[in-house]
Amino acid sequence: MKTLKIDVAVIGAGTAGLVAYRAAKREGASAVIVEGGDYGTTCARVGCMPSKLLIAAADAAHAVAKAPAFGVHAGGVIRIDGREVIDRVRRERDRFVGFVLSDVESIPGADRIRGHARFADNHTITVADHTCVEAKSVVIATGSRADYPDSFKELGERLITSDDVFDLIDLPESVAVIGPGIIGLELGQALHRLGVRVVVLGRGGRIGPLSDPEIRDYALAVFNEEFTLEPDAQITHMRRHGEQVAIGRAAHAGEPEPEYFDYVLAATGRTPNVKDLGLEKTTLKLDAKGVPLFDHASTRTECADGASPIFIAGDAGNFIPLLHEAADEGRIAGGNAAGLALGQQIKSGMRRAPIGVVFTDPQIGIVGGGYHLLKPGAFVTGQASFEDQGRSRITLKNKGLLHVYGDPATGRFLGAEMLAPAAEHLSHLLSWALQSKMTIEQMLGMPFYHPVVEEGLRTALHDLAVKMRASRPGLGKAA
Image 1 (tube, helix red, strand yellow):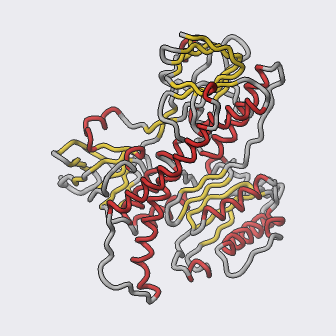
Image 2 (cartoon, one colour):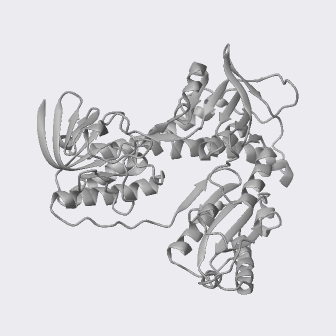
Image 3 (spheres, one colour):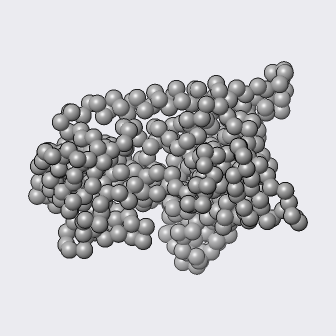
């Protein structure tokens, strides 16, 4: 086993790891990047890009189905070729992965180490059985993987995860999606629009990232107009039945016959890839799930015996598991790891205003962390419906409800939740306003073109401004 002495060792060559490596090199540190699996980010291989490719196909099918409402008749029966749909998804997915591979290949070969990494101590990593890396500082950027309860395993090959969907050869006839989170909602609706019989079942009532009760209830009603969504389904049993899965639900009256599905898609979350890193050989403090505790501003982990030489970035830390956040954390972690190795001071990196988008139709948008993080009695809510909003009705995308939140004491914008057409764009405008610390009056002073969906945002801001003026400072309450 050869030994390398290095300034910074980065474990994981996904989004966060690649950014961390390059940040360390920019600071003048020597660095290596270690990868035990296939090169290619979660986003490119199994996340953002292939899911949006599937959604794009679903949107095309849905547009054709809705065309007669505009007086446009294509004639004949809509035919969806599942093999062609999946073939395009996979081809374009592989193209995006290719861009990542090119990025990896631009890294000098001497800086790339292949093999599973394990800690021997806070500064020492062994890679497979061939390399020992002694590093002044380390960045953990090992990403995450799809996770599901052990009881699901008895379903065998009838169980798939979001990682598996894009490796199918053809679209199945039926799928039960377990988990109405972001992934479950996106894939569930997309598969439904592509002709797959779909039910989306959950536990506890959660619908994506929504926490505003009124928005959540509205979303439940809207999605159920299209496909079955039961966010608090009482599943009595789920078992293998030949080449299908039988699922029983207590909510059905009497002793109902189970429903049968070709696959169960487990969309029950992702878990950080930290279990097999040998963290027990370090002095890191871990949370209840075995994930290192760390400072979100500097990405530096906490050690039981003093200052930590280990940083963590991206999905491995499970703070905000989004690509742009992974890139930001990689940049912070790589820069600080290099700074520590070179004897410089650790710095707090810039964290952006929280923004989240779910690419359903209508889309879900969350700005500022969501309703559940707001202090009760210290905010006011402005509202706008998109059911009669001009541009939304023109395009027959007039399903939506927007809530914007403001602080009556300061006049400042606090965040928003929405189910709305073009929520990805509305959320960006609002996140920029939040990061700029704008007041509601300043936001209303910005230009709004006509006729655009953004006029619905202006309606909500006007409603909020009126309620804030009527509320005594410091005594605002949810409306």
